[in-house]
Length: 364
Figure 1 (cartoon, rainbow, N blue to C red):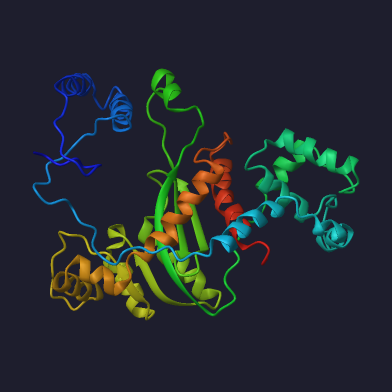
Figure 2 (tube, rainbow, N blue to C red):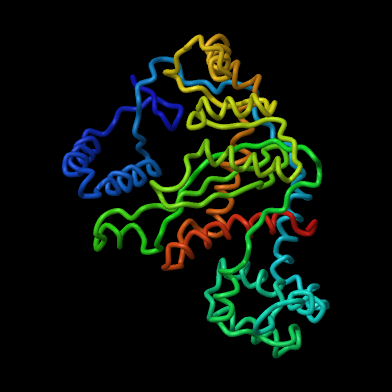
């Protein structure tokens, strides 16, 4: 009897279920975008009393490695999340409104700034949930209650927010670890139904490649491009690490999945004395050329994936990058509201910048 891939008990699949599923699959094709029907069907039955199965034989797949033990201090973690709410209304910067403007306008040609950068950055944070006209209304209400000297209009907010130079604050310590990975963001918020019903073909995704310290859970760099354009993930990783070096940071170790199995990247890591935790592709061959990658392939094939992953602490990669991607998408969504390509990419990068600011608060 086949085992259920999602549960623990044996079961016999309902013949009617198999028949309906077969009809949906046979009537679906890649070009007609009908795969969503299949997923809806699976979702409906997985959460009732039927699950789709795969024959694993008599033995269920067992989890390898040490059992995960959650040692978080939940009281401390809960307070940290509550404090992030305070960040959204931190108005301490208002006390230095005039002094900040004076510094910003020093030596400036043309019309002087009327609103400090601190106000614009706070409005950029609010913009993750509120549109520009809404931001004008929020700021107007703050001015009415004398919480800010005056309010700016939505067009000024739009222009100044898109002019913000996004930079990620690095840890104070001289050394860091780095993990790089990529994901995608949607170019519209029309929804899957609207795209399938009225769309004229799949739109490209906005590709995001981030580098983070998996041990400190700190974002170190972010690169945004349109799907099919821009640098490859290994090239972005090298660019981020070179930038870290220019800023005086020593990189102790680098993590990456199979997409980073590149000879150039391994050579870069060896030249800069950076330990590697890059997964080798399963079909990799040993070329006996004495290269850094060849050494890694030999070590990987000798030890096998499980032993190699445990020794290199490969699982930390998920904390460094996948955890950040998950948090950003859950908190700010994975679509954009901007209509211009350049503003779309700026909006996506700003999501990660805002998340980084919130994560660091109140230690900014």
